[in-house]
Image (tube, rainbow, N blue to C red; front, side):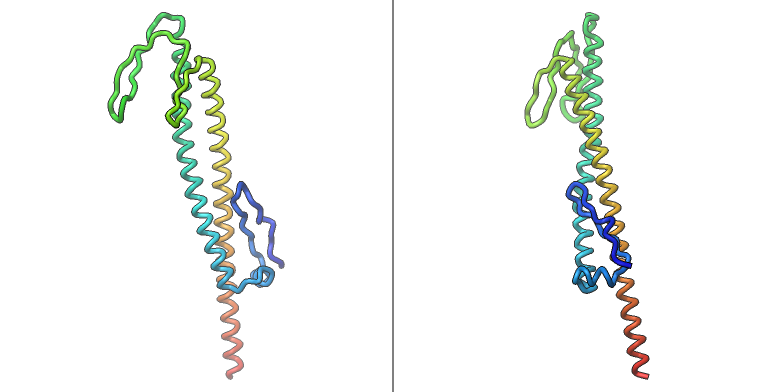
Length: 187
């Protein structure tokens, strides 16, 4: 019953946790005493929590970004569908939080996309559709990877918590054995 290293891999900078089958072998191989091993694992759990907070923030950002991209795609496709009909598009748009204005948009061959960092560029409708579609695909792919990273991280947290419990329980068992042995010698 040696300690198992099958689960000790890394995913995108997240260190893998090692499942410990035999605590005594693990402590001997790592050169740690029980308190040092528990401290190390508690520190690792804290690192996992920090990484989880960062990943959750990235997930929230992506989940907010995807509907915005889809909304932009809908607007560009609406503009394209109105092209050539001679009909103006009536749109309500937000000026500031809670303040809207109505606009009449005549036929247009181009749209301006806000790229961020105070940068806005004018694209043809076709270029804008291609760019937004690519951005949407990238955002969805990033979200999938992020969700997989979060699942991997949760697995590592669980493995580490189980390892902490196993080491703690092993230590309690060893102390009871030493007490029983010491009590037997005193008789």
